[in-house]
Image (cartoon, rainbow, N blue to C red; front, side, top):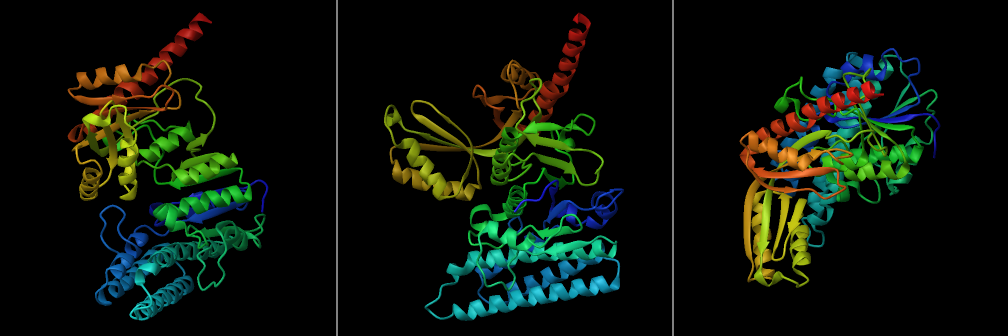
Length: 482
């Protein structure tokens, strides 16, 4: 399945809540050609949190309440709240009463269908032969699909009312008894679409044999997006966000100090993901990279701006492109007998993997292994217990820290480590450790957790702002010599 000369574009959840503002700019605007584009949409902002659980706070949604249900009232009320939130969301986007009525009916049919399904499953599992735990992943997938189906349907209605030949492409598998793999599901959804005359609005969730949430959980919409781009041979994949991919958080360093990246590569994108600042899910980036498709991260509300292009090209000049930070826990295992003995590293890693702890960075010496991890203290206490069982003579220490990274495609010859350490010392921030692997795209500074914001500001000024001025000066000197 391949379509010539087209792009595949994704709109995130926060931007989707303002999709009516994007109608006359990003989606339609002054474009001569409305078509040759495939749009993949997330659920309206906050809807997936209500369906599953809040991504940041962990507040339970329908799924979490259903999985811990002692009585039906909790998840039933939560599902009713989801329906109300969906109706509120599409009333902001839609203007015509007929469209609002159609969207209301869509919500009613999907929510009532999900409600009946959950009731039936509870009754079935009241018999001893069936275990609810065996079906929870399927329930998570079913609920996730409700959000994207709703937003895609509503966006299609909005565009059709504006004279665009938009087509709703539902990959959620609603009431579909077949069980295709992801490639087959995408082919089934798009095979009748004519990109010359139609604008497909596609759900970010795709029901498939592999089970997207089993491997990607909340990153499934970007995997769907990148797989569609690879399957259709897109010229470019574009993610529309509410902001530009910038050299630092403008709230920390100031709007006037940050710089739009403009151009970077997939190595930098992977490192940003590792730091919890995802330009795109790393598995989705891998799909695009393998297919040779460049990714563009653009500001949805500045459609005239090209945003930042991510591809495989090397940097024209070495530079620090971005400074970002992440709170981490330093999980340190000391064992005097570790020297020259194999198995310790593997044993600690096995425990961390079993408890699904995300490793951000790592350091070792003769008798100490330290993993810098992104995980709650509760999970780390369980890890500590299991490591002590495996290595009863070991000493385990845990410290909350901050990892601040200076990242760039090419850091060769910039003395980033030395300059960064000097700037932090001058700024009164104590560096507890520093890591830089030759040829890597980042230098990592380990600091006390309460120093993170200050360190980002200091390093951004020293390595990005002053670095850019130095590059301009060197270029000017070169021109004078020439």
